[in-house]
Image (cartoon, rainbow, N blue to C red; front, side):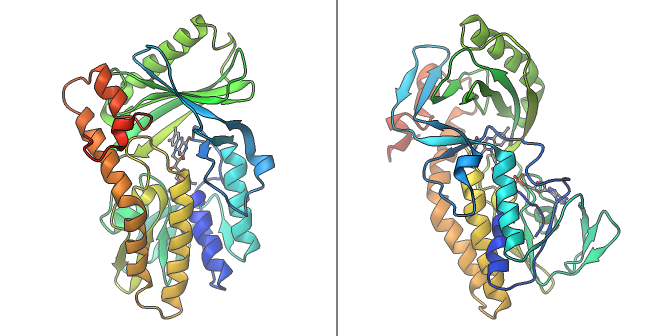
Length: 346
Ligand SMILES: Cc1cc2nc3c(=O)[nH]c(=O)nc-3n(C[C@H](O)[C@H](O)[C@H](O)COP(=O)(O)OP(=O)(O)OC[C@H]3O[C@@H](n4cnc5c(N)ncnc54)[C@H](O)[C@@H]3O)c2cc1C
């Protein structure tokens, strides 16, 4: 497995649980750090491997949508939690190791040969019987089999002090955030304040985020004081890629961001990374045990789980492209509007 994020660690745990020999590689020194995430997960995500009390920063009760700075629209019962992504990813990696996976950090995959041989930054070469690419939005494994996320949102985020505690995820929808949105996600006395825009406009991110921060500070929502961290990253928003391929005799499976499994409107991808990773690990183990259909089953399962909801999100994404969207379209194209979920949508 390449990548020890939520997708790779979940794949490794699932395959190792069946007794497979699993090597989990990551170029980072330690799973989960540095954090590149706004750290919200829905209440629906439940995982035995995660010690939720230690991982949760605070609960979330509702979502607030602000279109062009107008009256906030409140969506009650939008429940979830803010997590420490560092602890969450660490818990999943520890679980994979506890089930027998070998985890090699600080080790990048530098190239992949046509026959599935994997060359590492430490000079070693690995010859897997199945290769799982869980190596994020710009997956090297995906590129080796011609699968690339071509539509990306670029994001920039600060962690800033809040004036008062908050229990909602605030979403800022503005025409000046093309292909993305702004967010304020609280975690106790601090909040993750970020903006995503389509990749080709990424040079706008810094001034836009500075302006949003100044605006919220002037409104009394943010306390003056320095940001505790600055991060960012890329989010695939073009929809799911085909997830099964081969390099000669070696099956290749993609999971998580490497498979484009982030919602094209919200950018949420933690839950689908865990789920797809788990299914990829099970499929790999099944194929190694002689179940010839295991790989096709993986593709079909992902299709039935995600294709309809991603197609809906992609229709709204396309509706926002082109001319600068007005307030009404910005509102309708977000998940808190009834129109978003209507079958006559977009
Ligand atoms: C700014 C930002 C905010 C976000 N906020 C949220 C949110 O609030 N909620 C949500 O659900 N989703 C959010 N997402 C999306 C979410 O973070 C991803 O969908 C999720 O991390 C995908 O998990 P993954 O395991 O597929 O990939 P990743 O978490 O990206 O893990 C991939 C791993 O592969 C490793 N890797 C990459 N290349 C190589 C290589 N060549 N060799 C070895 N290792 C390699 C990386 O080091 C990394 O550890 C956000 C994303 C960004 C960028």
